[in-house]
Length: 105
Image (cartoon, rainbow, N blue to C red):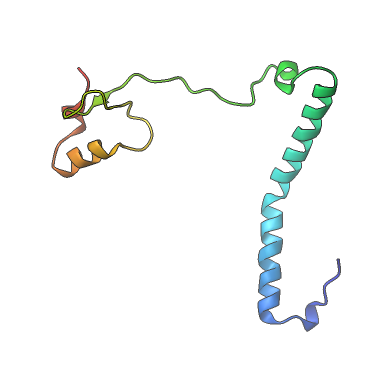
């Protein structure tokens, strides 16, 4: 596709520049996805999954962690210390409490 850059407005040029930058930044990811799709299709035609052939699972499984903290008002509400803090942890910390005070014994 040819563009007549000399006759484009500044707004049009900047929009084109944004589109080009976006296309460049996602190019490698798009090509990897295309290659992966082709490989998965080939494996499927041969009666296998790609994970079976490579010995690698496409999804990493995270081990579940035991709870480290419990809500004193409701001990059934626990938190492993991973990810976003639950509201009850945030409220305790805002009131001057500490994580140690919420630790499961």
